[in-house]
Length: 97
Image (cartoon, rainbow, N blue to C red; front, side, top):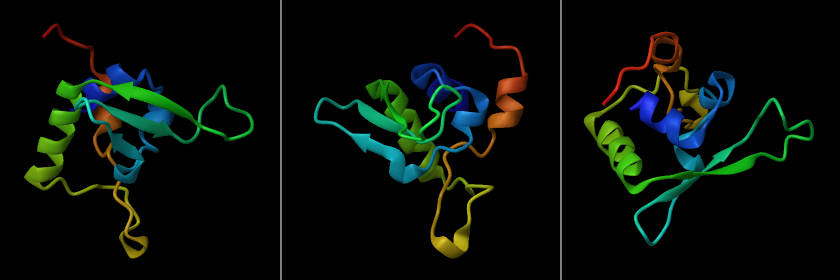
């Protein structure tokens, strides 16, 4: 899931690990937009919107439904991070589908 979402959003690893579940906004056509809050190329911290395909959104929903543990989230504030396995997934060499 992490590779597919990272590929769709074209996020750097530092951007990817900051994604939160509430940053994903589904659209009517089955796709979604993801708010990337912090970026290396965003000195003012405005963020950017990234497009996510319907297939990737389906993968994210399935992953969340399975009961991911959202490692790295601050549970006291009710946060849930999307990219719990980002470091491991981005360090390995991508394989063809």
